[in-house]
Length: 276
Length: 122
Image (cartoon, rainbow over all chains, first blue to last red; front, side, top):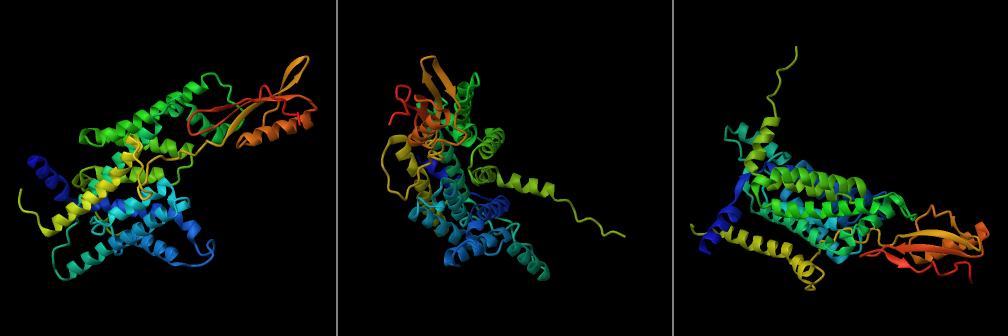
């Protein structure tokens, strides 16, 4: 038990590393916020400007640009979670908007402001002027363990939710396809229900596999490819809003932050010499 | 294990609260325990396709059953199945129109017993 607690403290509570993965996630979630909510909150669509609209645009913009990002994520995520819980039947109450709100809130407890942000650029300039060392791009990452746990629970409970005769028989998927594509005339293609059945089982197996693979670092690379395929097919076939892009974006915190940092380093070349 | 700092104690508290909240829906979805509404279950997109009906229509006569044109629009529930069938009575001139229909549900297709019912009958 003592060893387990020591491991928990070492790998979760004292887990520190590069702030770049959470900074990338901050930008992606900020953009996803715009994609999900901005259009219906613009003044020309809503009746009046209100504190929700103001906080939404200020918070999401601050997240993308990187100004007081953690405070922005805290207030924006908390507001959206409150709206989802208070008005569960509204557009705020959808599952994918809840995932976006909750993970935005969790980002507030990460050093997501220390990389790829306007705040970072200003502090680097100030340090250079003062002849000091550049501020570190790192910090405590315990909250990313919660984001990873959220991904595991999401896939595991999505599997549990589909583990019933209606879904596994292919009939639920057939209904979804009827509503979105084939309409109210029954599909007469030979093997149609078997195709639906295979796709249903495939979805359940992949989701269950992802919930397991997330625990094993060696499996995560292949699991990410499977997750991208799964979420891409969801996005293309049924109206899932920002669910697919948010779910895939969250995967960035599953990987070793030092490796993600190095990959970003590798992507950035030196400043080219001036022409002429 | 070295002693925990004040910040680390706060992190433990935050992690435990967050983890409990994330794991809470498991009690409802895996074990059937009902939870307060501030715990969100992950039963996503469960309502998609539950309203749709599919139907094949037949005009019945002494010569046998004749397949009638199916609907172009979506039949969103049993009343739509009846309404479209009654419309066929007028547009095709058949006095006896029947349907083989099924409607979506959160579980399996629900069959409607319209094969034995003349939809043109008042």
